[in-house]
Length: 392
Image (tube, rainbow, N blue to C red; front, side):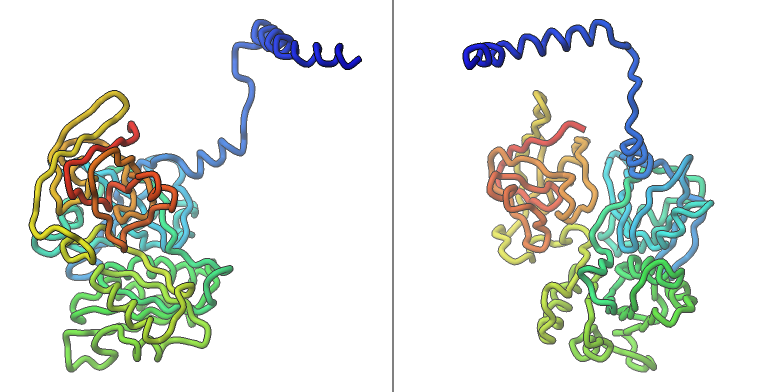
């Protein structure tokens, strides 16, 4: 019996192979199987969505709010605080840019779905894409977008019932989305917004936030450039944060990069534990030479070899710009979404050479660091480099 059982086992593979061939030979050539769960997931979360700009309105003297509706079908659902990534072609440059969604999630799943982004015009020699968007996007323009992305969302299992939002500049946009969702009754939390601005003449989304009639949302302006302002003045200091905090509070921070280190220091003064702090970063540092630990003293140009399958391209890469920007300038397509080193869509293998990754933009997993992977949007070349990217 043991011998017969052994022989039966070792010859089993040939029987299975014959059975499979018989099934293939006599089977239906048409695919009659469906996966309803997968179909639903792909419908609700497509790889990309084609949208049309249906309205443009002023959000302040330097910013505009753009309304987008699906060219056809539905919009993917999102959470308040998440962002959308736009595929853009500006001149010869093909790039992507993330913008926080300033409308509420419920507005994307209603009968006439839409989402909105609020974009501030960049300062001189800064904000190349945001300035282009502000000056050129009109009603009727069509775009391909990817959404939703980001973890800057309220999570009741992690966050306190009271959220103190610390915002600056265009960092007000995700909090506008949260405020609208709270007022609609579909987000259960108490939100206090401390919004730092230089002047009362340029407060982004002030009218929209001021019009929200809900006792669970408070909107407080903090003005730094007007001594005679009759309200909170100065910066988002520890004393001001303490004033509007409750016994159990989570702190959500969103604004310019320069604001982050300052606010983090003020929260440290108050002894706020890290688990109570959520930060959303917008893009790479404007001046990487000011990042802690950056080793070069002046701009240098290096050779960057980009490997895609069997194809190799050698391009120039500035030490002051991320690898992703160098590839975009050369017309090499590489998926990017957050452009802050967080999401991992532009993850690539560093085959040789040295790069600098700022601590604030290093969203890599431990294993990626160990085995030589970097996020192209937050890696700056320090020498000639060779990388392998996915084919897109």
